[in-house]
Length: 291
Image (cartoon, rainbow, N blue to C red; front, top):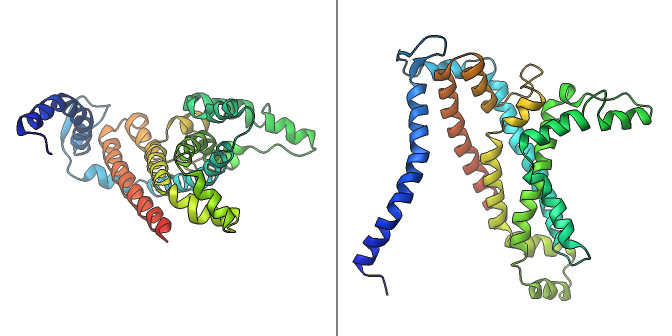
């Protein structure tokens, strides 16, 4: 029986303040960014210099760093997803099994996700990857090898590894939560029918985890497209534009080149890209899981 109209109106009135605050929190910054993207506004001159139309967008797209940053952004997102999804699934499958000390192991596995991005990037840069004093450099010299400068010679791959290390615990947590809702009787019945581990994973576990995988992909994509702190701390977008992403290019245009108008235009383009990539990945995963 549906609630009476008076009850529905009361519920809407009670939700109105929260919805209004949420809409203002989301729409006001977006509207201001859109307004700045259409203005000739720099930090060198005082105040706006008039309406620019689409000039800022044209300037941002024709920037020589735009094409490399776009490619780096997509490579970063796809590379991290390619590592975190199978890695998180494997960890979730292990943690779903009963063994002594499972609670402690779960807490240790999830620990990297709760470390601040700038802190984890600084630890990777100074303690692990430093070509002179890093742990990997000491290990290479102990084996008679020349230390490898990861941040200079393979900056994008190093960032992908760093971000995957941060996000694997999140994916494992999402998939483990979904995995615990799977009826063990179904697994046992499939095993008694002769289905091996690979068959049970493909035909029973993965379809059950479809929604959880889609949620993990969507959340990761949104946050990975806005990666900034790790790049600033480790590579500063270099060498050259080897690790510059769209988000970091917006930072360069806005604060280093004192041009918030062009930076705002880049921010709008980054929002459009985030939505396009998220929709594409969601549909791709949905079709793959329906087969």
